[in-house]
Image (cartoon, rainbow, N blue to C red; front, side, top):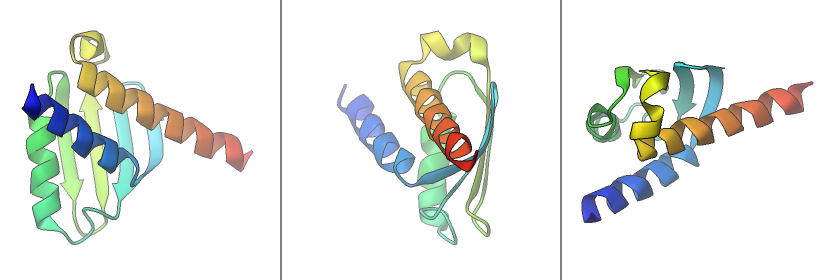
Amino acid sequence: MLSGMLDSIKIDFLLSCVQVTCFVPGRIRCYSSLILNNEKNAVLLENLFSRLEGVSEFKINTRTGSVLIVYKQCLLSSEPLMQKIVGSLEKRFMKVTHNEK
């Protein structure tokens, strides 16, 4: 229980520090200053995402701050934390693309 709460807090903080540049159902690309040239944060993030059901690919580039998340949409309902992440990133992407028009 406590571990799940800590994961949720980490995710909330991460989500507040990302810029979503591509959102296609099943695939998200974003950038975060938290991992830019920061291997320690990249490893923490990778450890967190590696435990989430439905994530089929997770790549981090610390030189650019880029994160690629590939996930199975059909498994979102069975993983509440992943559902929260995807929902939040989609909202951020829609807000940015809406403001550009």
